[in-house]
Amino acid sequence: MTNKEEIFGLLQVHPEGLDDDDIAQMTSIQSRQQVQQLCNQLANSKRIRRESVEKAGKRRKIHNFPVSTSDVEALAREDWHRRLSALVAATNRAEADLLNEALHLLAMKILKNTSSYENPQE
Image (cartoon, rainbow, N blue to C red):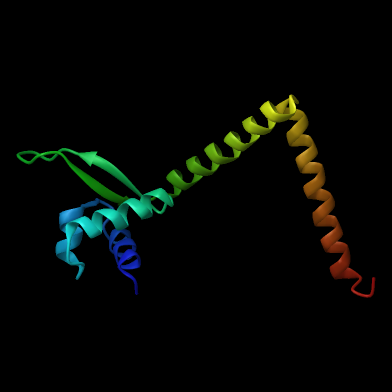
């Protein structure tokens, strides 16, 4: 198991979040800086989220949290909407027209694939 996967697994069982120092202490990873780099990579790939948290009597620290289902759904909505907006800008077509065309093409592809499964000789 890589250090990155070890961190990812550790955060899955700590939904309350852990800071980089906690992770370094709980794993065999030697430096907090390495933990920070790995957590940044996980956050950049949207596998975890990093958030500044203030705890009573302590200084503000960045904590790492597992990505929740609602986080994943929100990211997916943002992603497809961003791509749709880019298509609208590039083609000067309405969102509704692009969505209708995309659904039509998807339906045709699915029907074609279903047809080839039902009639493998073709």
